[in-house]
Image (cartoon, rainbow, N blue to C red):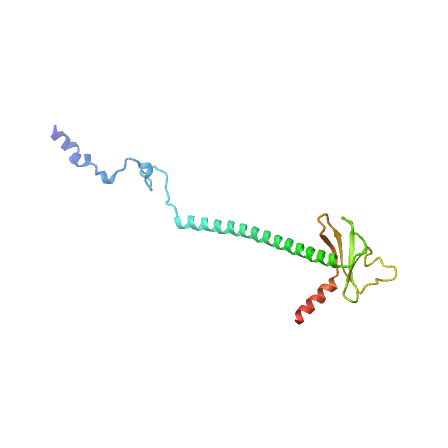
Amino acid sequence: MADKKDKIQPDYDKRLHIDEDKITHNPHNLPYAHTVGSAIIFPDDKDRIKTTAMTAMVEQTNVQMKQIYDQMELLISQANKLKERVELSEEIYTAEMGFKPITGNTYHLYEKEDGVKVVSMIGPDEWARGCKYAHYVATARLMGDHTWDIEAKNEEEKETEVEVQDTE
């Protein structure tokens, strides 16, 4: 019977032995196609994946940083407006006032020639014979918390203050 096998397939015993290092029990885990008819498997380009992920991460963090920056600018603006309100409130409360201001009403701050500030109910455009004070400072409305909301401010006074600061 051995003669019959040798005649048909002389290397039958050699082919019967399969080297365990050259086979896998889980061909679906191979990083390449294991038969001719298998789907083509391309290895992942790990550098490209990392680059894409890094680009997306940088873009997202930049968007978030811009949002935080915009929020900071808004907070700074609000803090500056609040600071101006406090400064004007202090100026008004130290000024001469011949009446009791009512919450929600608008009043006007003027400065006399001697530097004393005065609160008036009459606006800068409402004087019949011209303003009797040296210059107009601001118009403000008394809020419920007894701070003053600036409705208008004399821009010339701001420019004068800036010029004085520049010369110092």
